[in-house]
Image (cartoon, rainbow, N blue to C red; front, side, top):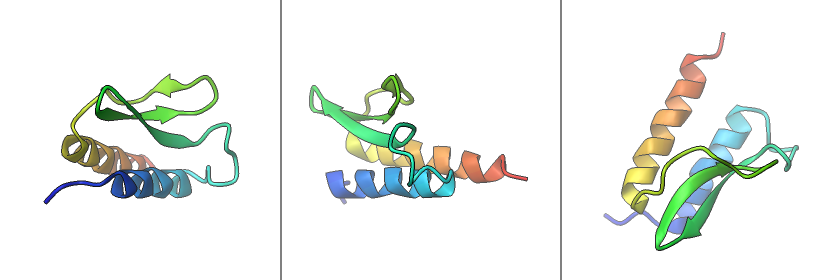
Length: 74
């Protein structure tokens, strides 16, 4: 099954909520598309968080990132 742009954007929104960033757009994570492949970015200097990957692989990467966020919480 194909991963859609909307699914990736929802994953980024879920990460922002988990980190309490939904109210601070200068620190939020977002998906940037270029060269036909997306990557996860962070606002406030546009920091590259992930490499450019096919959509399905980026979805897996973002789920692992999200799991790491929760694993690191006290």
